[in-house]
Length: 205
Image 1 (spheres, rainbow, N blue to C red):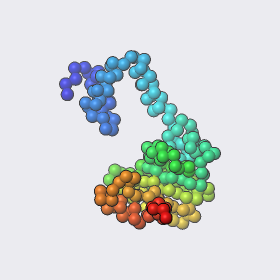
Image 2: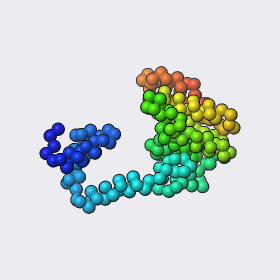
Image 3: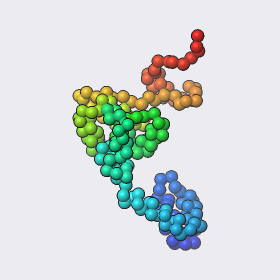
């Protein structure tokens, strides 16, 4: 890619360092910024700088927050006795988007992955155990990806909590709404059967 400006090339280099952004896309972003008003670009840069300098991680659940304790942990309308354990903040956003969960969270900051050099000590598992030991928590919901690393992390946490009086559950791995059994992978289908729930639909008599 022949870029006629060193300044544009520097911008492309930085933009293309973001996940999922190739150099062609980065060039398109850089040229778009050139077309915008200087004050628009200053606002853009200011927002990124402010985020990086002032974002905090909740002291209780380790979610990103503008405050020392996030709004979810502070909310009197959330259930203190239920904690949903997730890998990162994107999972919190996804679950919150459903509007179905009323408990609180614990963000691990990743999953156990020896290949990537990530062990239990790199995650916030010890902080999770401390929350359970506080006595308020009655149920942990393990909402980790159905991958080898996710399952390993879930197993590790469950084993650590084996002697604690807390209920451990896992999100159901079922067939997606609108999905067809014919095209469902065997692992997902097997889990759907093993984790089946009483059928409440069907034909009315």
